Length: 560
Image (tube, rainbow, N blue to C red; front, side, top):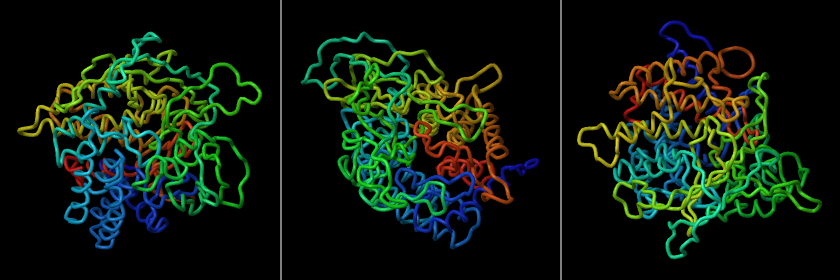
């Protein structure tokens, strides 16, 4: 889509919010997830999963844009359907219930839902870990810390407890921004009575390629999964059976959880009937969203012998996006196997994690990160698991090159700095530390901020697919930073506009035959599994619309 002069942002926003009306007519009371780049048809979920709040946010932006009572009613009704997530055990409540309610000005029900969610998240903060753990509602291990657990959660918690919000933010930064370290393979024996005492490093020996198929999971017999990219494609039926798309409140063992998918990950082949899978079907081979495997990664070294069975699948992502896959967005790009093999690591013994005065501030355990050449993403650890007797262990997935993870962290830092610079702000926000984190996440080059406007989904695999959703999230974060005083203020604003212009002119569909106008294409849902690698993503649309709304005066980024 092209625009001229100063009206390019208005034209792009008109297109994106016009697309919202088309989407609403198609999906009805379901939640869009990603849309086929050729037809514009959406794959949907019944309860929204971690992305449901972005659809509600888009509806609220459209209601502001049009001023129509019908649009406002649609937004309010959608937000109300997010209510079951308030009590769900997941740190993605920040994504769901902050972005699903923050734009709902003048809606008492949305404000009440936001308040209940904030109190529930505050109650879920683990005093020993000093953060709200990932939780069990999406399946897999509960005691995780991930980059996508921070955005939204910080402003949501700040409405009820500034110390909790600051602790959650800095606790994740202490882990996710830790520089890579080398550690000997053996260390002191763990102390069973001290869960944060140092222990043996147990570096995971991941191969750099040739892993078994990623993202395996199972559907119950007869589960309808639709055809991603086909008209009316949908993830239907009881969502607890979809790892990564579980129903609110479902525990880690609900449905075909991560544990069972690891135990039985054999490809069974064949469908019982069109659109349905037999019991135990492997999702990873089908590229369905939300399929993932949780837990420690240990890919055996050397070739498998006869009868050895499948290699354990590496962990995937309920909020996927790490890895590399074939790029259908640009034919000149080569796809590749994502088997980056980061392994896991531990924090140095006695490392202070800065928990804003909360108990349990110390974390220990020697770092042990998998070997291999350094890449652009090295130094970022987007996923960690806490293990009793060993402390925090770095997970192989999401990998360090996950560009959306970098964008999520930047967005959370921008929110933290906004709070830190308010009059009478708490010292718990630690603005100097947040500024240093921003400099690490968006380093300066000789001609301004470094890196392409639209990054690869996996920055360690630049030949792989792009991720426009990472660019859109980054643009919102930069606009937030540009509204705060500092030496980089003008550069943040310039870069944000450059990113948005690139998205609007090179990746946003215009009017004409084929797919609808207003689709932000070249978003990558999950490069590791090849799921939706050049598609329209609902959160990409949301952040693009939010950034354009900020440029045009429709939204105030200090409120969302």
